[in-house]
Amino acid sequence: MKFVVLTKAAVPLSSAIRIDPKTGTLIREGVPLSVNQWDRDAVEFALKLRDKYGGEVIAISMAPPSGIPALESLIGMGVDRAILATDRAFAGADTWATSFVLAKTIEKYVPDYTLVIAGEETIDSTTAHVGAQVASHLNIPYVYYVYDAEIHGNKVRVRRFLEDEGVDEFYEMDLPALISVAKGTQMPREISLLRKINARDRIMQATNKELGLDPECVGLKGSPTFVAGQTGATFPPRKRKIFAGDPRESVKALVEELKKEGLL
Amino acid sequence: MPCRLWPPVNKEEYKGVWVYLEHDGAKLKDVALELLGKARDLASKRGNAPVGGVLIAGTDEMAQEAIYHGADEVVIVVNPELKVYTPYEYANAIAKVVAKYKPEIFLIGATKRGRELAAFVANTLTTGITADCTALEVDPKTGDLLQIRPTFGGTQMATIRTPHRRPQMASVRPGVFPKPPRDPNRKGKIIHETVELNSRKTAFLGAEKRIEHDIADLPPIESSDVVVAGGRGLGSADGFKLLAELAKLLNGTVGASLMAVRAGWAPHTRQVGQTGKTIRPKLYIAVGISGAVQHMMGIQEAKYIVAINSDPNAPIVQNSDYAVIGDYKQIVPLLIEEIKRAKGIIQQ
Ligand SMILES: Cc1cc2nc3c(=O)[nH]c(=O)nc-3n(C[C@H](O)[C@H](O)[C@H](O)COP(=O)(O)OP(=O)(O)OC[C@H]3O[C@@H](n4cnc5c(N)ncnc54)[C@H](O)[C@@H]3O)c2cc1C
Ligand SMILES: Nc1ncnc2c1ncn2[C@@H]1O[C@H](COP(=O)(O)O)[C@@H](O)[C@H]1O
Picture 1 (cartoon, each protein chain N blue to C red):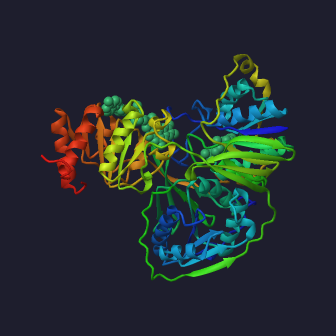
Picture 2 (cartoon, rainbow over the protein chains, first blue to last red; picture 1 turned 180 degrees about the vertical axis):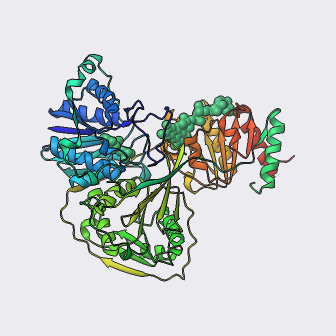
Picture 3 (cartoon, helix red, strand yellow; picture 1 turned 30 degrees about the horizontal axis):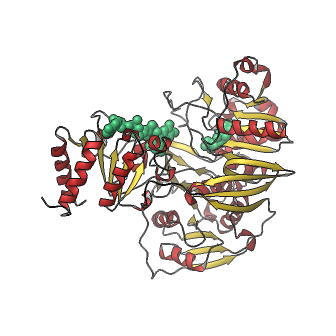
């Protein structure tokens, strides 16, 4: 069985971000990238399935070459091999163009995949789009927020928690299929340094020379949406009345204000 | 030449603002009504274009409610194959209806299911989509939809456009836009459609109610005028009992920061913020919450913010209307007492 896990080499939130003034997109080159935190849940999930059913876990990522260390750490976790789709032409992609490259990479390099496993969302884009879009490009069924799965013949049964309704739901899909793994539901295993040291041999890079995609369908050009402007988030101004000192006096002053504003 | 996989689009053919009408089997979700309100507003800026709704496996009563809240036409998909929700089949069905009616703008509520469906629908229609918009506007120059969303952990706001593809799609979290008033005199058209499924690839096997143990028997945070929220500063689950007492006194409810949820003191359904819920109460009281941007994202539209924090330098202090500096264990009981006095529950 072949378990394809989609992992993004994301810009950690702690790093200073730089935005390309021309395209309004995040500059990822030259920024140390690390595996999107929630994709570790997806990787752990994939490894557990492989350990149970046998086969291979293949991580696929679209990123600039600075995404390689992130893939090395996944090999260190136990991923069998990784494919980095990387090309200058892929830069500035929105979720359509990202998922297009990922789907084409799967089709070309793992055509006999069993299950595609995505994270719930990325920390730097938080769209939760890419999983469903990959499923759409591949025309396969999908279920999000999964935290348990069993394979029965050519079907997969999944369990997911649907938080809005407070229910666990059970679905069965024809394989191949795609799931996204609910964030924080797995206990990602430790990275083995020994495995990581030899990781390079297990990472393949695919540029658009290999993938052969229409340059108009990838990167910024292949993105139906584009960022027209970006500003720092601002919050509406507040009154900022601060009551410090004697607690009882402070509370009395607060209650007076609340009464004045008709809030009590 | 644009990507050859994208069929050419004649923008003139696309008219109106449509909304996906999610329901729970009995009634429409609030977010669907909120979106209808926004759809009307956007439609008025597009030459009073029609507002429509897509309802799968819904009833005429639901469609009627949508009309009372601003829809001009509602398409009910009546295929018996679509009685129960499955993502792949629903997404395909929604895309088929949208492709047929060709709205210029199509909005989806970013509930868990909505998030699951939205991007697949967009891809099937070979168009773009922006997730979790907090504002939607019409560009007066081009007439394009301006899709405004927080990015990068809520530190940036991006304005996104879909200039060449139609429909222009966006998802919006519940609670971001106000629910429009219900007008039982509004008239509209209800259309029944059967949509052919090419193939079924998913089966629903069943559901199990999870018993989440909640803080107290209190209403949900999305629908309360007063929310008293606790953070890591509470130090324990017990702190939430005190907050529940204050909340009840104010006819409100209890919310929580991510850290309080992580600590297991409150269920995730009560989390306020970027990865929790966006709320717009009249009064928000943040107790032992530092006020990180991701938290503040969820309460930008609160009318009044009160902070109770022991640290005068906590960011929330500068981002609130009133801040009381002190230990909440001392402040909250005093506040309960003073409010009781103000309400005449206890005498001077
Ligand atoms: C991608 C991303 C998404 C996120 N989404 C969310 C989100 O949706 N919601 C959210 O809340 N956070 C979110 N966060 C986390 C956010 O950045 C903060 O870490 C979090 O909000 C902090 O929670 P807190 O204020 O409870 O804890 P802390 O930051 O630890 O603050 C505790 C506060 O309590 C005060 N305090 C301590 N003791 C007392 C006392 N006895 N009396 C009174 N005050 C006291 C302290 O002075 C301090 O200000 C997100 C982070 C990331 C990276
Ligand atoms: N550039 C990428 N390369 C590989 N996988 C990705 C990429 N971007 C997103 N994904 C996958 O899609 C999921 C959802 O991402 P997003 O839509 O950005 O929130 C992630 O958790 C990953 O599994």
